[in-house]
Length: 200
Image (cartoon, rainbow, N blue to C red; front, side):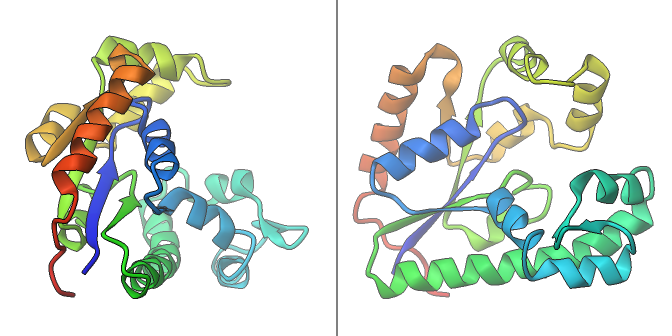
């Protein structure tokens, strides 16, 4: 039975880099964000256009138009989530089933808002990627079009890092460089080697 490890972390903590480290170690990763991008070019297109007319262009969801349609409208955001979340969950379940069929010992679910959406219930353990707040802010503010105000708004929607760390089974601190992060990840992989996941 594959052991399912949830991978999460707030913006700018190094979650994507950690996910890549898992892949390079031979561990399959299901990336929820990448799945959404695929859905916006595929199965979700007609559903979103029906719910939010004018948000599709050239056969794909225009993220700028969609953002404008839901920004500041909690009811609209809930309608969007009602479309997307079941499709992402379906893809995730198919991924886990493939890993189990292949007899893989470990699989990773990369879910940005894992705790916020109750995703930990679908995992055998959770790894939280973390870094000091000052380093987090420095990383995020280097991104194009990012401002302190935008960062504050994003963080307001996310569970505080301290609470995520409290709930985590494993931590990777990315503030001390890639070599140290890889060392921490190696320790986690050794700790999980041969550990069975629960029946689903």
